[in-house]
Amino acid sequence: MAKLTKRVVDQIAPGNTESMHWDDELKGFGLRVWPSGRKVYMVMSRVKGRLRRITIGPHGAITPEQARIRAHEILAEAKAGRDPAQELDQARKAPTVKGLGERFLKEHVAVRCKPSTQAEYKRSVELFINPKIGTRKVTDIERRDIAELHQSLSHIPYQANRTLGVLSKMFNLAEVWGLRPDGSNPCLHVKKYVERKRERFLSTDEFAALGTALREAEADGPETQSAITAIRLLMLTGCRLSEIMTLKWEYVDTTARELRLPDSKTGAKVVHFGQTAAAILDGIERLDDNPFVITGKKTGARLTDLQHPWRRIRDKAGLGDVRIHDLRHSYASGALALGEGLPMIGKLLGHTQVQTTARYAHLANDPVKRAAGRVSDTIGIALLGAPKHKSRGQRKSAR
Image 1 (cartoon, rainbow, N blue to C red):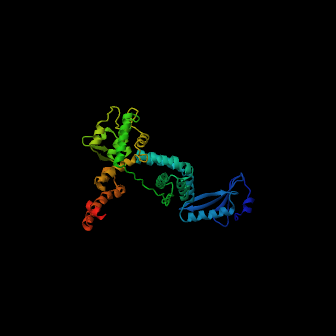
Image 2: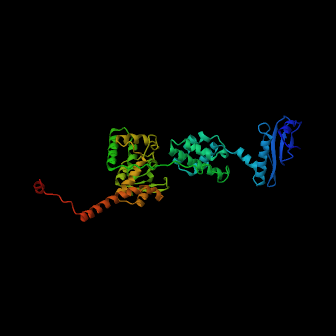
C-alpha cells in the first residue's frame, strides 16, 4: 500500500488477474487494475451495514487527486447515511424526459383528464418539451433548464405558460414515482408570463349583423346547416364550444328546455334555455344512425371543425376580431344588461368558482352607473334649478 499519486499509479503493472491497490492515506480509496492494463479509481464504504463499492472513474480521464477529492465526498455522504451507490444506480436507470412524458400521458392524463385536456397535454409534450429536453435524464434536469425552455417560448407566452404547467405536473409525478427526490421539482419559482384575459362582448347591433350573416349563409348554401345551427346554439345558450359540438339527443329535453350534460369542464350540469333555442332544436332533423345534434358528414359522426365556417361567417358580418368563445362572454354580458346578478350568471354558465364569474363584475357596474346618473341629474335640477330659456319676444327686444 502507498499513497496513490500519478507516479505510483503509472508504475503499477498489470498482472495475470485483476488486482486492487489501496491508498494508505485515505481509507477505502483504491485503484482497480485489469490484466489488460485498464486502471479505474474506486472507493469502498459501509452504508447501514452494507459494504458498497463505487466506481469513480478511469485513470487518465481523471487524475489521482481528482479521484481522491471525489472519494472524500462519497465517504462523507456514506457517513451521513446516504447511499451513493444506490443513487448512482438510480441515476443510470432514470428515464429520459421523453420516457417520463410517455408514462405521464399513459398513466395519468389518459386516466384522469378529459379528451380535450389530453390533446392539449399531448401537444405540449410532443411539440414543445421533447424537442428541447426529451433526451435528457429526468434526474439531470435543473431549474435553469426549465427556465431556458420557458424563455425560448416567450414569443408565444400563453403556450409557454401551458407548457410550464405540464412540466410541473410531470415532475411532481416523477417524485411520486420515486424518480426524483421529494421537493425537487425544477419548475418551482420559474415565473409565468403575465396573461391578459381578452374580453370581447357583442353589442345588440353586432348580434343582429351576425344573425343576418347566418341567414344569408343558410340561403346561399356555402356553409353546412350543422355549422350554422351550432353557432346559433352557442349564441343562445352560453355553452362552451365542446358542449355544443358533443351534444347528443339523449341530453336534450325541449319540453323542459334543458340540456342535461353528463360531463363538462366542470362536471355534470344542466343548461337551461329559452323558446328560441327550443325552436331551433325542434327544427333539427334527427337521424336514426347518428346520436349527435350537430352532425358531421360521416355516418354516425359529429361535426369536428367549426373554426373555419365561423371565420367565414364572422368576416361576412364584419366581426373579424370575434372568437367563438366570445359568444359565451356576450351571453353573460346580455344577462347582466337585463339586471341579473353575478351569482345567477355563474349558475347560467355553470361556473363552480366565484372567481371565474368575477371577471364580469365590471360589466355589472353599467346599470348602476346609469341609475346613479338619473338620480343625480334629478336631484341636480331641484338643487340648481331648471335652465331658463328666453322666449322669442325676449330675444328680439334684447337686440
